[in-house]
Image (cartoon, rainbow, N blue to C red; front, side, top):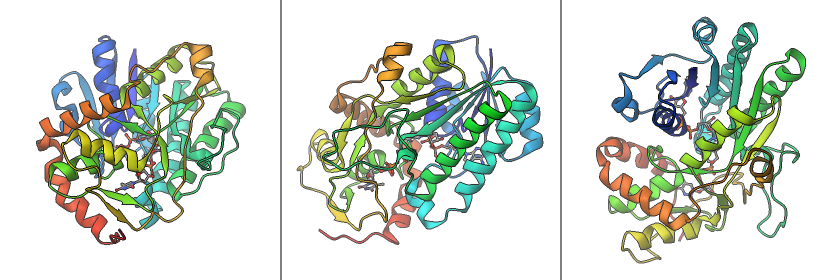
Length: 334
Ligand code: NAD
Ligand code: TDX
């Protein structure tokens, strides 16, 4: 099978490529990636002779048309993905997440290719800490940030292309991922690499915001499950019952690295900071039979810490610049 993976040099897309080559050695993979600041081609170095890596923009309609014409399946990971960046400057988010997705959808429509769209639980907005409900496939869209609103808009484009043009598409909305090769701007790798660099972890606001963590391999296994067995036109939520508040995550990282549990700083909160995400993945489990493999969060974090400790070459060159970027707006409040 020929597979076009957009954003395959980023965190989740690259893990998808590596895992697919392991599990499906016959897959012929082309990666289309703009190689923005978020990409690290070193992630794909070990498989460079087994894939085609095309540096290009998903909004480049001619390039996309050529690549889509030559594939059986598109798995669309490419996006601007960081909420904090979307608050500083939304323009790339509108361009890539909306215009880029539109360009892919038009090519997929012209060539009648199977399409899987990767999205996020953030399209549903947030929940109160004491709300007994969780997001399901029928929860109304209510995004908060420029990032999540452009992801919501891209999901709606897919739904419209399915209904209006009969596109052979599926959509998945997943909760927060962690694991190897995640950019150190994101919460968990930022705090792991802070502690490894002798810097105190930084918690936004009161640290009680809750995220529903899933290991990236569980996410990607779910994506293949949906591609293989999902119903065309349908949406599936992906989550591993991993709700943890941010303070507990930081305390776990500190503890696993032998530091006092209170060796962190509270910093200014993110504007519009979503309080809690929580996914009900019953549909994926009961209809398609998927189950997460990583159910012990502390063990998953411990393995992720080991990965960052053993792969300092992968992240260290970026560390100072990332922290300088945060320091420009972040103030310690406690
Ligand atoms: P990432 O930022 O690590 O990687 C994104 C990749 O897309 C990078 O390699 C980047 O170079 C590429 N890219 C950006 N703009 C592009 C463009 N115009 N053309 C081609 N390539 C471009 O992101 P990630 O965390 O791996 O997220 C991947 C997907 O999963 C995104 O669609 C995101 O919304 C979704 N998602 C992420 C999470 C999470 O926790 N990280 C959770 C749910 C869903
Ligand atoms: O230094 C930090 N301190 C902190 O307290 C950072 C970077 C984050 N946080 C908080 C904000 C969030 O409550 O940690 C939580 C997680 O933050 P991020 O890693 O920025 O993730 P989030 O905003 O939840 O979005 C992520 O999950 C859903 C991904 O970046 C998105 O691409 C995905 O759609």
